[in-house]
Length: 579
Image: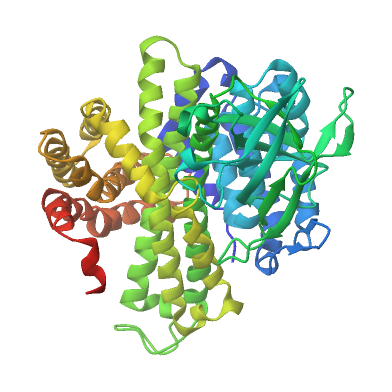
């Protein structure tokens, strides 16, 4: 069961975040309500009619062939072509390079629909957008003209090549080599876990590869980044010879099976031709720019798969009859059982908190890029703070929500044919790739909290306090107590790391509560306007109350873990786990 939730997205943009938060920026001055509605409607139509129907069949996976080619599931190539033909693959790309330059908030809303419809397919677009973002920021003008436009048009796709068998999170261990030769470099080495590293959905694949030059310094300071196209590109933009890069296998995975995850071998012969982006030894900064964009996108994936799991569970609960609900009558569907109602209500309550939080993060990204003066700097800081919260909290909760979706189905949820299990399997990767939850939490703890002595987090808490009601104020007070505890100086680095994930989750539940309250107030304000269905507004108010009662109390619980939990972890000895 797929529902793009277009109506709720429209409400969040108009009344919770507000059109004025981005239409005062010069590039987006023409984006009135009608234009935004038209974009959302067309994106929802594409998601519903083209992308969603091939989700469950796509779960069978892609196929690797002995010649190194990969065939994606039936309908994938046609669906991706439809994205390109409609101009959707370049929605966030600058107009100078063939894109639409849409506001980030509309890009985020569109991505939510597509990933909810079919995460395995939409993942190709997410990685390509990330590569476009990195090249627009760091590549030469010639490189932008050569590589960005075909990706924005959907004719080419992009990948991010970081991981090697010995170098996952520890990028200092990268061994892939880049030897200079004239105006290019010869790349040799092997990369693993490369999403859409090989496929049949585009004419060319542009790999962005981390590698070391022969005289590079050791560690992360010696990493450079290179454009390595699958097919070399002639001066007129046409495709030339096949480059020396080969897909030697694809992974067999728990989920997102439609998306081929490739092992790529560079330089089996002379060496793959690659082109340096930026300066030598500056690759990590360039790649992290791409990763930050991708991390925000993965947070949206969390929202997407949670929404897909919710609507599937809702449809099942409305039809399934089993037992007579307490206070109900014989023949009532299971949706009337109190615990099924609790599961569905809490799923929906968190989704309705996640959605405006993601859109708020998108607005922060745009304002941090396009605003002016002190406001620009302030929004940049806020955007950098929100990315690990959005990525970490929303993906962790997506797995919990997908699990609740299976629970609503009962035994049928454990059967693959219903589709509920696929959402659970697909959601599991989100807390891992583009930086695990622990990596997001360490970023939040050490770079976004301790580095500036909590200034950015305290400003966020103050903004929440201005909007808070009595219930939310209690959570704000708990968050302040936690922040003071972290900043007082008594924690070792290991202590701080041991409580970093609970800290991230606390800020996730807190900011989610902030958005839930904004939802409630916006719904109350619209009740007399007559432009929204009365039950839609009543439901939003009710879901906000559910969040306040069932999700927001996690702030207090996590606060206790943070205040008291690091000592117990540090008291452990690794040798005791198998005692």
